[in-house]
Length: 207
Image (cartoon, rainbow, N blue to C red; front, top):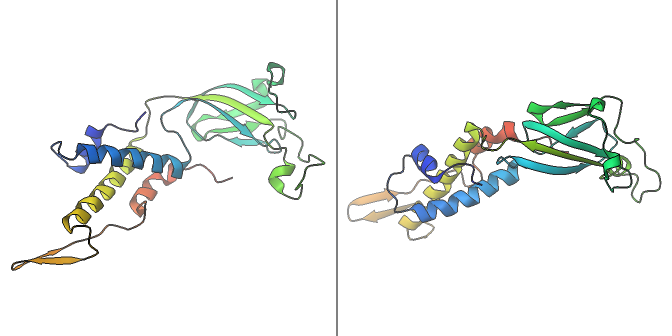
């Protein structure tokens, strides 16, 4: 599912006509993948299953706001049968932040003996011993994410049009008779700072 319609993106960018729709569609597909990868989130919503180490009292879900939690399974054997589902009174869901907090301490005891590389903290927490199945509402892409998408598409679109205008030569200006054409350039990074700024609040903690 797309983060926004091509028509809305064109409206935000002030682009009329359909002559470049094929190009814009390709840029939109790439920009949406870029945003999802950078934020490490799926803004489309739906049902998700994620796995976590067990030695913490906090589980940071990839997607939010959370509309419902189907189950939290705690199983050191990593089989996650129905008998490993813990009661919902053992945790609190901070829905707007996508965080599940255990009430009675870490989901799994902190130290798991006998693991190779046990000096690595993330291994000693009990890797992949907690499974969470939860849902996020669909059709609720935030407006600032849509704006970031439009800006990123617009940035890449201008680059293509600029490069095309100078025949893909590495020149900054050209002279046509008595007229000089000077080619400007956006931030040359894959994701400009203005887009990063809009998306910064939608990026989860780096664990």
